Image (cartoon, rainbow, N blue to C red; front, side, top):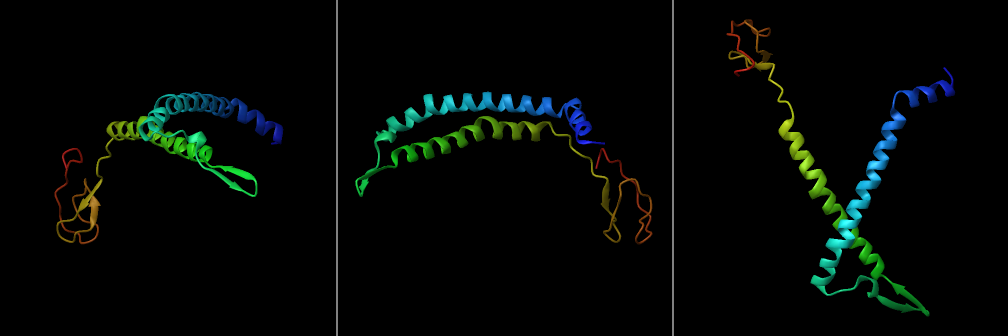
Length: 140
């Protein structure tokens, strides 16, 4: 198989479509979160601390002005952006995923005689050959 065949397989199997869709959704989510941070959260932070990030930190070194207010503003925006992403998207998603995850039933149990792991359906231990009562996996 050549490179062209590999490329056609890549496009046909939907990897390209899925990647493009994820990219477009990521751009939309980025625009939404940036708007939330810049238009709602950052003005509240600036008003609460009575600070204008753009005018902070004018330091003159050899007739050059170092404006670190923009950097500080970008850092605060970045931290707030991370917090918004975590509390609006990641945390609820992980909670919902944990809530709806299928619980896997235990398929093993301890032998009462030798404490080895045996199947829940076993009637005899494979390690010590003791007779054990099988248990129903749904009730154990």
